[in-house]
Image (cartoon, rainbow, N blue to C red; front, side, top):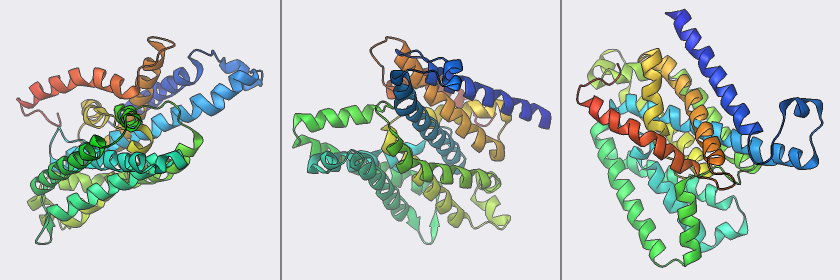
Length: 331
């Protein structure tokens, strides 16, 4: 069994490398790997590689990894196969933060103000979700779910209200950001989100055993001596940080956190010590692949990555809904 899982890891790493190579070397400007290694690229090719494709690919890996592992954590935490990062209000909070930056004109002062405001908004939404779900020193999955829905709806209403009075230019900016995309990403976006995402992913991977215990249910976890509410808050905070950081630099991208953990469980089983790191790797590969496919399908027109993930993820979501009728989560 150990050899089999090692083979799956090797296969996933090879797939990741192939996707990254495809993203870096394919596009309107052709770049040859041999010429890159030999230092024979033209000035245009060097600019495209180092300042357009490489940061774009790195942001895709970071955002996809964050969304993939966050979905795996939340599905284990809620014992719900349909849980994804949006369930705790992250998307709604990020949208409100981004709109505030656009409406107030702060985003015009520095291009990183919009992602920074989105990051703070996402963290604020998760904070309110935890506060609302807290009852008598405990946080139950049901109350957390309901609080997340309530916060998302409320933040969505505030966002819609602000957009009602916003000029058409702001509306266009908001819609462009909400669709989700990796175009025009730079090294500054990586510096902004990278430390949060990498630190959070590493921390979550080390907590796989604790998530296995929480997945058994509150009574069983307490019987094993676990402080359930404490660990639930730790998981939520880590998920909030990595997801907020991902959303702030990539916009609202759906289905990655929903479908990737399910695909991973088909191959490695339900042990979260394996599911979490595998989901991070697969999430990064999936998002970069969707972005590359969107760039190559109708060149020179690009299909934004949020659209591509929805097109590829929606059929699997329908399959998953049907599969849930057979109570097959985790198989």
